[in-house]
Image 1: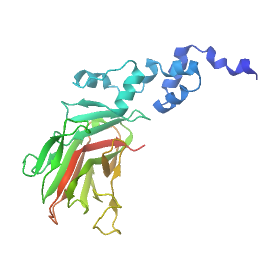
Image 2: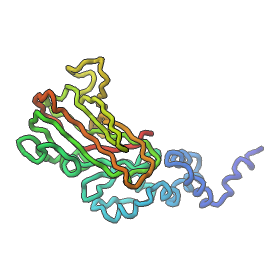
Image 3: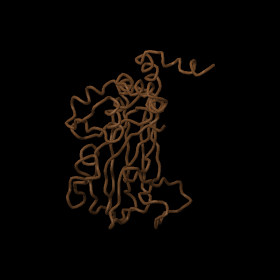
Length: 269
């Protein structure tokens, strides 16, 4: 085997190699583009990246007011995996998982999530936030009874995928009463799973029993914090829906200073 035979694959038509690469994954396509200039041209082709898009992307792009600007399908994929687009009249943000192309949806805290007393300015306020994908977020002024819930139709998700539901938030400098555990439930296929979550980091001044099984938040790349509510497996049934809820309605201590961005459904890959 000499140098002459080592380049035999370059004799393939570029569209043939592109077809082969399109049967892999976005991550593998990016790896292929680093092999050589011939592979890069094949891996960057629109035909490759079109294969990684969800089948209903054309419809979603036609209805969003948040039209992305792109020069290639790979460029569009990058936009969808980093910034995403607003859909359903701005109630949700759709992104794609960068490594697999699976759909990620975030529900807007102000437009797609139910919050007890969420429309009363004495307790909650809609405030602009440049760090959010949405124009406004919910800011907790003061409540004793905290109850947040949402229902999401699973047909929007990528089938045959395990998803996690995440509470996306920040705490302002004057937050109080949010270092105690909250109840978090996720309901799917007539089964409900209950967890305990805390909105302050584990190394904070937390008053809960350290022996309890409590989920703590982590800081994301976008500088928002997230804590997992629960998970479920979506097998593709058209009528499936998932319900999530976060609440504290027993101890009724005063709570303030929560900046609530939304609830995200993301594949667990």
